[in-house]
Length: 356
Image (cartoon, rainbow, N blue to C red; front, side, top):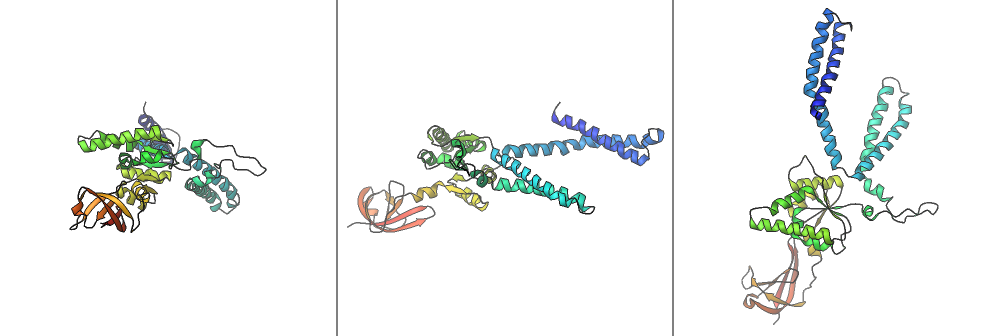
């Protein structure tokens, strides 16, 4: 028998009993006779029918919500919530002693309310501050009072957080180079719904999208083989959200971890919801070579600029250099002198002039 059928049977039995009890109260007697049965029996039947109808809603839906919620929680969140609940109930037990001595009805109601409130408060505080609390026990080689050293923790347990990747940054590919350099120290997680979107792009009938998707899968395979930190595909989902970026932001909020992306819109949306975003484009701009006005460099002018007489070239890191009066040097390498450096949202732009 499936869960729905079992819930309907139990609902029928429980609500039929409730209807029977109500019928005995209405009849004024629990003894069965011709008069009482005309009141007890119909209410029992009606109660059983109501139980069959409402049991799946009362039992299965809350059970499904609890199951989905627990599935999305990490082990550390479950452990923190359990510890917080125990602490809250212990405090409530101490508080209930003086509360129970209050006059009726406060002495009967307040201890129960205190247990509910303090239990919820303990769970909330522990989950919100779990990283700080657990970090106290994760310090390798920390010395306890009396000179006893804590046992070293496992390598994977020393990470207080993890990093989530979105589809665009995997396709971009630069993250694969970053994780192999050792600058990233936290585990990298790719939610299953991000991988599914990547596979969808790789199977697209459009050749450009298909190539982008396949490149993303190649980059992901490379990261798993060459990364210095764990790169894992995790079966985590947010059932109440459909759009992939919204799922990623909601998951990052639940886990309390940053998102690595190069998507401008995702960057803004996540920032508005309090999620930390590590933008690959901002990192790329930060590590570009620094040039100062007056410096000379050799540059190949490859195209015309927007203004009359301008030429455009690029440095090895992709930085655009606008050469005033450089149009006459198209497809030639010339020596230029930097006149101005501008920092824009799209990156760094350099203005230069040919050295006469």
